[in-house]
Length: 464
Picture 1 (cartoon, rainbow, N blue to C red):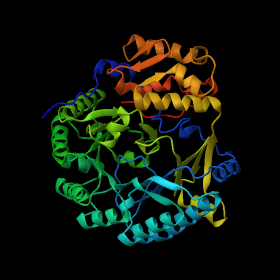
Picture 2 (cartoon, one colour):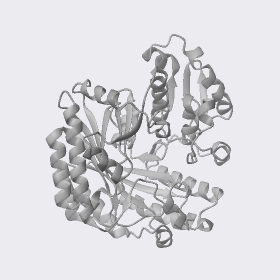
Picture 3 (cartoon, rainbow, N blue to C red):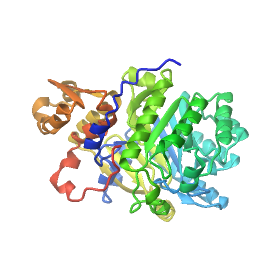
Picture 4 (tube, rainbow, N blue to C red):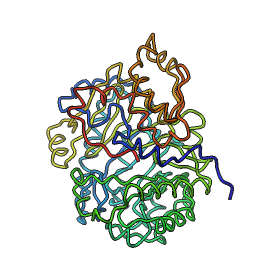
């Protein structure tokens, strides 16, 4: 098999040196900067004034039948499927309330169901959710409509049903195929049921299938992780998301069930990462950024090559900077200068809707500097390059060198280490710096470096 040029130079010593804690930059400012005193009226006014530009939609389904110990998502473990029907009532109520605040009906070119486990819904419930989504929004022909799949609960027939509903992309959770690792994280999943789902997706016309893996889980070692990689490559997904396990038991209660003594050491974890990078490159996958790899003909790879790659709360996206409307508990919407996050609990979410309010719990309104820095971080994360003069011109900034003087100063040690090249206003992340692009992006995060904010800085995961 021909090896693709991955444009990635794996340097363990540099990773050890710069592997600090930092944001994932699915937004800027990051969600930990959102405020409870967010002016919801301003957000509602922005909805009314937005026109009919295309939208991205997200629906959060929080329920899971089993609890995976590694998980840091907003989820509700339950085997009681009667809980989903009243939740869908509330999501429909929220969707109706948001649509009523829009002056014009809008088309959605992206739709994503996440969780939790979206396939907790049965066929009738999934159809109901899709029907009332279409009642309020036009799902564009040729749009990207994706769903997260748990192969343990989904067979070929359900995949066919999802395709009939309009889904054409899926993300399949795997994490690891080794039985000992699966037992340690309470996620028992066979290769055969995973293959059935992926084969059914292709037979049903899904345009892209992504597989999620995690390195750094308990009981992982180079031998069993290599076996997992071989099985994944045998499935030949269009994309592979290779996430680093972040052990934060003080923040995520389920992680307290993981035996810390069984976790790989930092050194062993780097070995796992290097192993995965080599195998994916040999199999023809290209490095997109952060933790994403894709085959050269996949939409993500083509979007990156064409300078159209974007990053939002669902990760990398092939569309431009769309407004995003999120529905359900903890969903985060983006509208112009505003980010707005829904209540994180079912009680808080339902209480707001019962009072006739949008269930927004917190948010933030971006100032001009936030918009400038959001653009800078986006381009670095998606393109691995940034032209400061062009950036300044887009935002009406007269002197780019003066504007970014502090940022450029912070970048010097990274440039000296060979992570980034600085040629006048032009910044280029090097192949050895690509795995550490979060560290590079952090140097443009004014809020992270603000002295007052530092006193209240949250604990982020490590960048590797």
